[in-house]
Image (cartoon, rainbow, N blue to C red; front, side):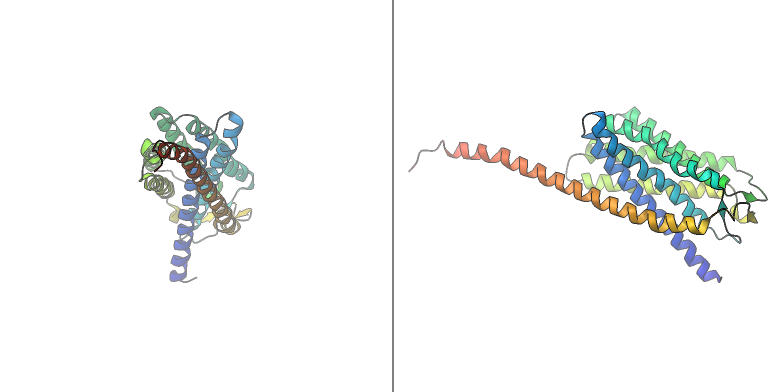
Length: 271
């Protein structure tokens, strides 16, 4: 494979990782916001689970694509027995953050959930590296892991504050706040995983023990084609739901205003 085609392939995979992260962030922010206006745990449960599933799958898929985007001289593979934990684990781990954000939006909830999501993201990213069984072996640079953790913590807390602050709920600029929150969450995920990848010096590795088990090629097809397609459909559904809710609110506001206007006009004597 030529250097140009390798670079193009790496760039495409990196862009797909960013796209998956963007869709995951949009779905997480949007479904948590819908859960915030629900009453009762049964009504809150569905949007909370959807938000957690989107972010958890996004974390796992983005890391798979980011690892494959590295210009390695050998095919990557992953240990089969670790895949359920690496895919289902982040989904389950994101549920508490989505639940607490749906019930409360004070400063300690945002800070605690941001910290928890940072821990989940770093665990997922390091887990995929361990599942690859790299040879001759990994020598972690723990200062970079700590830097990735600090970056993820600050990024998640800031993005959650932007997403669920008063400014993002009311006013003409609320859409900009929400877009900024999703963009910052994407930057947090992508930058964090790049720092984690750089902490193991992948280019010094010569092989993957599990390259004959879960092939990275098939996983990239799932993470780069199937996952964004499903997420895009879910994002469209979420957008249509939000638009329908705004339309219903505007119609209810008109119904509340019109009787008042008719009453005021009836006070004038007929000519």
